[in-house]
Image 1 (cartoon, rainbow, N blue to C red):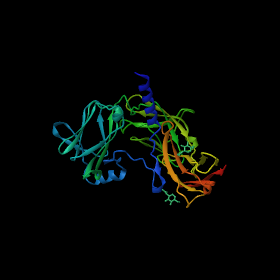
Image 2: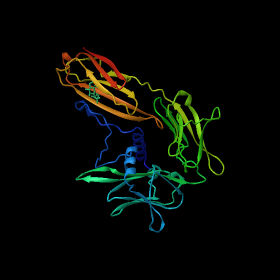
Image 3: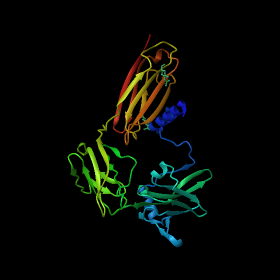
Image 4: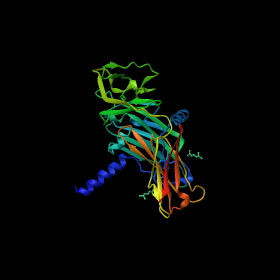
Length: 368
Ligand SMILES: *[C@@H]1O[C@H](CO)[C@@H](O)[C@H](O)[C@H]1NC(C)=O
Ligand SMILES: *[C@@H]1O[C@H](CO)[C@@H](O)[C@H](O)[C@H]1NC(C)=O
């Protein structure tokens, strides 16, 4: 392969790793900086609990095709054997599906989805323990060009592909890092391939089993161990142990790290393009905040020429990936003053606000 092809690939990969670079947005709208998919013909959202309940009240549109043309209407969970082809059908003339991400990652040829006249068909050949997970489908409602998920016709089922040699759902990552944050439940994702399997959680050093009380610590076979209120004492290396009919099995290892997140006002910095300017220069000030990925920062500026001259304010944010489960949001606001005049000399104050409070930082520009 030519070197430049390789380089392009590396750069592309880095771009993906660094998350989506957000477009520059004018301040005027003062709206939320949201990630918007470029092509917005179909709005797809992952089914929430509420939707599941709604579907539960009506009839599930999701069925499994059994032999000899018999059908099984699917409920919350289903346990199947591995290696036997699975066929699911979802009623409707326009259907979309969601399935475990490992089937997507490798563009798995075992999976096929076909829309027929009155239903959509999902066929998975040679399923394995790794395919254990949630399978859901929903009808798409179209009105002219805009299409939307029909909230009243969403069905989902968690399917276990039971394999006595794989008590845990295999994962591509063998040593996972899990970040614990105060006020946010954390999950040690050792899922199992059958709801019957008994699972315990263990600390490596000192070697001990973690007592599971069902409230602070609980186990959900579709998710793993859930730590309701993580604290610094929960950090360390952990693994899960499963007991089936035969010998016990050990899961991957999980490194739990405790991340102190100050739930306080944002930490902001300001940087001016210059400290001295002469009439006619273009100057700018950049206000930067590093914080939690979902935390929106509201920037406001106070400046000498306020109300007397037009300025250009540009806001951007970027999500920076710093390892599994750890993302930093990099928010920036830039105020640009073109063709400076006497009224523009003085103090520029940036106020950065989140739900916990506000931080003000300032910088100055003087005349030559
Ligand atoms: C801010 O000013 C610096 C120095 O003149 C310039 O390099 C930079 O591109 C400016 N930034 C913006 C967003 O205009
Ligand atoms: C940002 O703050 C301003 C001033 O306090 C307020 O008017 C505006 O609604 C806020 N915007 C958002 C998106 O929170």
